[in-house]
Image 1: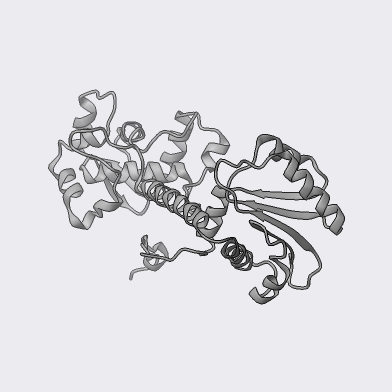
Image 2: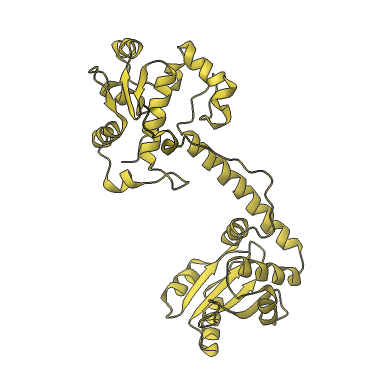
Length: 309
């Protein structure tokens, strides 16, 4: 089953602590994972940043929100226990505990409204609508994806307004930024020979030139889908060049037949459509600039892990 959102973990986590004994958060995560019958794959699933397991992230935030509402208290590092308020909350026999439930407590409302709580990092919510069931890290990741999706569309639109020679330079810059071909001058000398609405050339895959990659790129409008025939021609060109690896870049897209054919041929052919081209440009900083950097800081447990005499 999909991993529940962090609010769904609130009631089970509070029930887990209801026996009054001090609880360890790691043991709580294991118990809740068993309770929800999560598979090994789901238990190892990471948050978008790749720095924490998703199940850990969501249970930790469930604990944080319950603590801010006064339903549990942190007793020491990685440990917590239920409070009288938490017991009173369970005594109402709720079918679910979520952010809306916790707003009845003034401490939690203060937490949400406080500037020190980092409102921009809290899950999106409003007093009159349901809360989006994501943790702050997931909210940030979704916002980043939305921004990049819009930026990608702008990039492809702008490329379509530029000249074919500009597209040649763009692909050269991207190849170099990705670490292929050596210097920009070397790549520029070996690419851009066709003179049509695209480029063709060969670049080194490694600094010593032990392996080469044949590149073909076509600047097409979105409606001009590249079919199987184009990939067959490209595969034939690889054979003629004695190459075993090729990359076909386009600002449009590839048909299903083209994609299937690229997977079947003996040569290693990578297809990069307009969406992937934009993603690569964003990832490697080609044609984009950083407007603002947001640093997300966490407590440094090692700094505090010292013996106090």
